[in-house]
Length: 455
Image 1: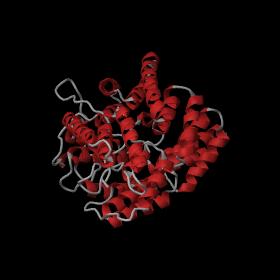
Image 2: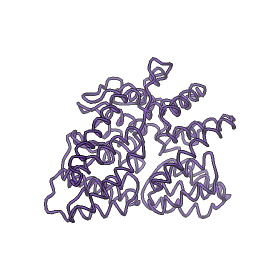
Image 3: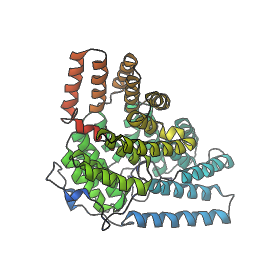
Image 4: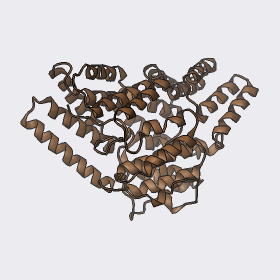
């Protein structure tokens, strides 16, 4: 059984475990491009991001894409020689998933889906590409399918420690999306116990941030970042996760330092460049932000970048330009949603709230929360209900989120907005102050510009 790529960064250097949002990038250096590290300050990091250097691996997005193509082509040739071997089909599926993480081409995911379905159907239970199947299903938010694959894996007679650790981590991902935060943490801890990593597990390290303790998460994550021999993409990925924690605690300057470091570590990556555009917006440098977002959106064709640009333009009063980009984003989301509706329901709800229809936003938020009732999805549902004029129902969803034990400034601000709509001014003010205790920037008008890395 071939060990699959799990949905985020690895605990072990031999596996391909990159975040869900790592897709397409643009190389801008020397062509009138931009880099956030041109505007720097001391920030608040305890680890100096400027001193970090990546190790072995494709040193840029362009080279990573070329390597991914070679990997897919090689796996496809092997399967053509022995088309009935499910193990070879699994290998190709994993290479396609890895390329999708770079390029964001959902055609790669669709092909991986067909290969894994054939492998599961053609292999005698409990054999088959079960962990690859579970990985894929978690990525596209088909949780029942992921659980069925893990149940089949549990019936395996022989399980090596790495596979068992992968299964535990995937079970943690499922629990987290179902809103079972304590169970998720237990599964992540179990994965680390089964196959102890040298540098720690990223998912476990980030867990305190879910409880409203980003400083604790920073200490754990920086320990992982400081480990030697990180590939360029892995290091850049970790750096953006570190930037997220600064954004969540209102340290925009510190976030910018990590964003610039990510751009240097893995040049040409669309996500790091989108974060850099966001930093320009937060600094009030809107012309530069518009230009940077436009470059990334044009070259990557990523709808989330189009959404962030449309949102920024709308807040600047550029209605026609905003509507044009929002229309392009809507078309892309619809195209992707036709293949993988579960995977993009949350994104489509955010899109509709920012630049579309409140009614459609509510439909997508309801669908997502029904499948994945984790607190962030319930908070989005509450915002959609508020936009639809259903504030009392919104409070009920926020209460459900509270019961899970997630803590975030975004959640508290949503409660403040809903309470204000209900005329409960004193309670609304208290919720807003509680949000500011977690993030001093909570309520700052510029915080509305945070599209990437919000809590």
